[in-house]
Each structure stands twice: as structure tokens, then as C-alpha cells.
Length: 291
Image (cartoon, rainbow, N blue to C red; front, side, top):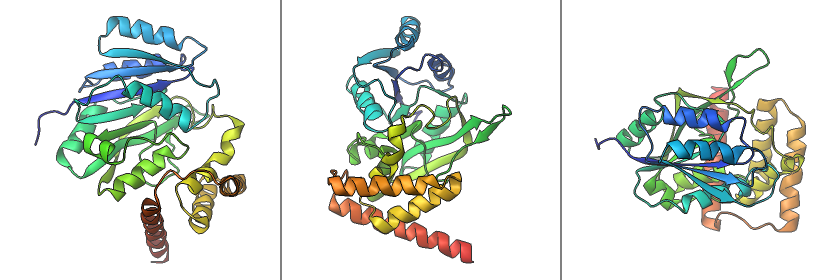
């Protein structure tokens, strides 16, 4: 086993004044501290920058990067463009790299355990925990409509080897799915630890623009899912989230992207691998249901 691993954190932050302080406190309270924390003030119009300045004045490990982009809170390219700006000020002297949202609270031993996962499971390329959100009664409950081996985009940790192999993160909607598919394509494994419970202070998607509703289907098209896999994935999302409108929105987004001949974000070979993997998972789940 190697010594304790070293890591960097990059936090894209757009209008996160209400939550960023709690996120930074939870990082600074970690049992295994990061070497550097880069917070990207992504065109914020509230007091986000002042929060970053206050923390960076007291902690030399925290660096601020100012970015100019749109003021809308959209998933996909906006957040990854900000992440890449933060990444550009870092060197490659790390063992794993973390993309973190600015509205989460991490348990005290979170990164110590993430480091242990990478240290003991050398095939793991992406690791993380599980999201918990407060319901109307104030109870923290797991919110994870995806598969149990999916690591949410709010707290992705990448081994250096995996991050290099997948070519970094795609600045497009679906980035936090295609990264995992490409990791598998390159022979890496995923590790979602149910013992790592992360509190998400803003419910998923709450701040997203109404324009975002069609982007999931668009992402399925750009990842070369094909019609049938996209339809099945949309039906699964509709059932898990109990929102029938998701099926319509996803398929409209898919066909709009096809009509517009939107650029794919994976190669033909990667697309074939992705479809084969998706069909394998679909068949496995059908066999499990029927057994």
C-alpha cells in the first residue's frame, strides 16, 4: 500500500453565497486535507466572491479563479468550463482529482476514505459517496435515482490515470455519465461507497433553467445511445422519479438533437462500447427481475 494519497479539489461556484461557506468548512475539517483547493467564481452576482476571499485570506491552500460566463444556472458546459479554468492553475502533482459542487457538506473522513479506496483498489478510476437531501420534514434522505455504482457529479474523485485516459471532462450535458462510460471503456472500475453520506444543500436541479428539461435527451443522443437505449433509459428515469413528462422531454430532446445533427461527444468506437454496455446492463436487470 502506498502512503496517504495527495489530492486537489476544484469547485465551480455560480451564485453560491448561501452554501459555499458550509462546503469550505467541511473541506477544512477533513481528516485528510487536500494539497490545494481552487474555487472558481463563475460569473456570480451575489456574495460568492467575498466568501472565497474571506477563506483564502486565512487559508493558503485556497485559490480563487474568476470566470466570465452566462448568468443562467445550466448543467453541462457551464460547470465544466468553470472546472477546466480551475484545473488550468494546477499542476499534475496529485494522486487523485476532485470535482466538487459548492453546495455540499462532506463527512469528516470523506477524503481519507476516498484515498483508501484508490490506495487499495488500483482498478478504481472514479470514486465517491451518496447524496442525501432534506425532505419537507427536515429528514436527510438518500436521493439517488441512478444506479448504485453511479457517482454523482457533485463529488466526483478521479485517479490521475483515469482522468488522463478519458481525456478530462466533456463540456456538455451528460458529462457525469460519459466520464464513467469512458472510464469503463479504458478498463477502470467505479466505486460508490454507501457509507459516505454527503449532504446536498440544494435539491438536485432546483436552480436549473427551464431550458434544461430537454438536455437529458440531447445528452443521450450525443453519447450515441441510439433510439432504443435512449427510450429504455428515459422510461427508467420516468418510473424512478414518478414524472411521466420526463419521457416526453427526453425523447423530444433526443430527436431535436438528431434533427440538428448535434456533434457527438464520443467516437464511433466508444459509442459501440457504450451501447453494448448499456444493453448488457438492461439484460442483466431483466434477468434479475424475472429470477
